[in-house]
Image (cartoon, rainbow over all chains, first blue to last red; front, side):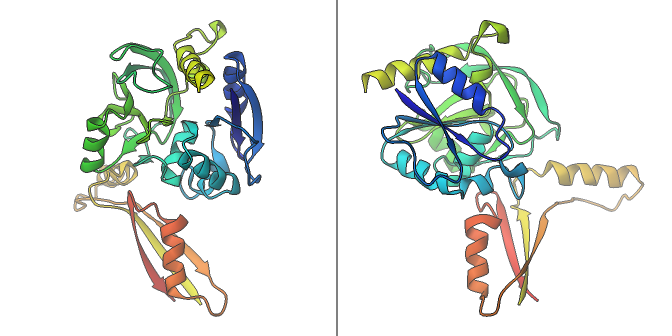
Amino acid sequence: MKAAVIQFPGSNCDRDMAVALEKSGADVTTVWHKDATLPKGVDLVAIPGGFSFGDYLRCGAIAANSPICNAVVDHANAGGYVLGVCNGFQILTETGLLPGALLRNAGLKYICRTVGLKVETSNSAYTEGYNAGAEIGVPIAHHDGNYFADDETIAQLKGDDRVAFTYTDNPNGSRGDIAGILSENRRVLGMMPHPERAFEEAHGNTDGQRLFAGLMAQLADA
Amino acid sequence: MKARVHVMLKDGVLDPQGAAVKHALGALGFDGVDGVRQGKVIELDLADGATEVQVGEMCEKLLANTVIESYRIEVL
């Protein structure tokens, strides 16, 4: 499985993401934001967490209009897999690949701690390693993780089984407790919590491992 | 030509910064404030020949996220 991790000025989880993917068995290339094309034969594009372009204007807004993001949108539209974590999720909503937007946390505080997540669906390459309804612990670290979409969009996400994860104790005011959502074809996942930070024993929690393992199993078959 | 773009969170979208400012005004004894919304102002210094239509395109593409924000263009 070939994966590309995109690096923007201000990305800070790119290496963590690359390590998690490598240790899961992927062949990983890091790609600079000014590149206009992805490496040939890439199966998965991972957009890591961080503060791309200093969160200027809006989180993810400038990154979403960078040259590499045109290639990421083309990759997704051609049926490719894209995983966006934290700032990566913000970027995916800004590109329009995922609906909604991420607002400032309702409590106005930056929150950095492990939170409880409920796996809402096991029907995706990312979540097939979990049982639907399972509760896991995954760290969050964000100031703008308050998921917002209009009533119609929220109803559609729920109706189409596209909510991947919800918070068990909503930390940021997200509508419907939403922590992560899937695209219509279920191949693009955006989530605020960091599965790559719950990957190794040294992290004190390995609940994120199955996300990468599931992805790897699915893409190895593809 | 100069243009000023006012970007505001849409009505119904939670504005926790506005709420914090309202709270702070109340703490200072200003009782007459029913609500505060905080937005941003972006000033553009435009080359000759630039049009308001182009500024509108800039707003749609980058300056505002129309999922959550509205914008108003003021030509100066």
